[in-house]
Length: 293
Image (cartoon, rainbow, N blue to C red; front, side, top):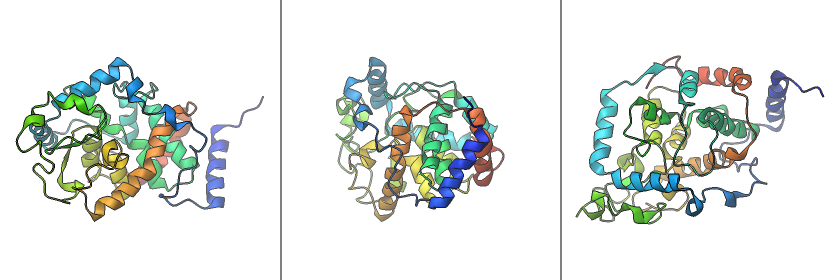
């Protein structure tokens, strides 16, 4: 049987998107309509590897650690390389927090980007899908473990929300018993905005800070990157006492992005080398040749 080559298939996808007109970034996703979504994020049935990961993360993500992590970020450049090189470097990592997939990191990035592309979403959103997990490079740059790189994120400096998965595992975190950090607002003011709170340090926060000054991505893409693991907020509606009007815009962006990140994990395998020419073209539009990591 004769199979069409990559260029033919790639051109066909883009021709269809042109004919139907690119969908707005916030239109509902269509690629996932027939997926059984009950099979994703089943943490109660997760393996011990996942449960042990979250126990460690919840015990060690303190205010003191998060301040230290941000100071270290500003003091150091960990590597200088382009986006595709970073994707290839990341490919050695297996995410201990993820119960849904054991595919390679580069395959997940390309699956996410391809799902966004098939739905005819803008190029900048395809790029957000392509790079959204590149912050996991932190693990290869000398993190303390995976607990400060991957996993769902949450606010530190105030009471740990009961909407966080495995909320009972915070009891050994010293902030859980702190007179200030254990209160509803903690160190924050009502509706101060998420830009003014500390989210638990990991790949989302790291990549957001790396790219906001080294890309031409719009705010919506940067919000998708920063908040894509912030499930207590974008799925469970926690932290409304801290958010402001701008965060409503960010929430719409993250909710538009989330299906592509989550439900593309069951998609068919992709061929990175065949897809590289298309995505290298997009990379060139939005990023300099070399990024300081």
